[in-house]
Image (cartoon, rainbow, N blue to C red; front, side):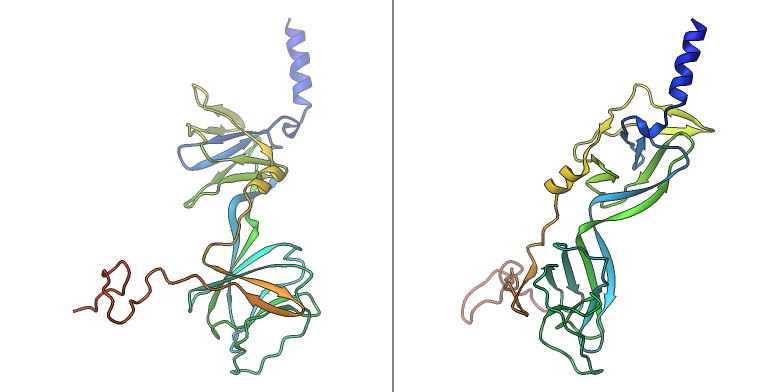
Length: 263
């Protein structure tokens, strides 16, 4: 009997952890863990539902460099928020984006809001507030972290606030919507500890399926570009939710007219 147990122990010892199905655990401490990985190996973890965000600054002509060649793929969706004006602009990277070189004389603002690429593939947008902060959101890419698996073969991701809607590891996605929290798992000197009674395991689904079903679209406040024939047109800006009243019309302060001036 002991020889038989030793035989099976040797078989399982020879199988790497990554050969088994991955298990997800949502801990009440705000960490999400994935078990079944190769110990001491680093993994790239995508935070599903959290677009990649970068900060930029427009130049004195009101032109912003959005991304360099290779960072943005075909059909990627991008949003740019002009922090000074509060306006958000979006476009889809397509073959319709015209190619031309940037032209900017310091201090001469380019008021036309256009999207184009230069000969090196760098994407630009004009018509922004000059020399002011701009926020760039790549809607079709998730924020990524690189985490090393511990000696027990699992990684733990601090979710934060707001938290992602899924943890994506390679071809596997672990949806967090409706997931049950538990005590989680722990590793002490290479020994795996699982809470008892065991918490609910979160099973993975195909990452491609999850990404297709949960793609991030432009927000309702985004003015979306239509690029055709080398020119750029934009959808109308969102209407003011509290427009000023017409002369002579009554209104309710804080609802459909401007608030009263301070005393």
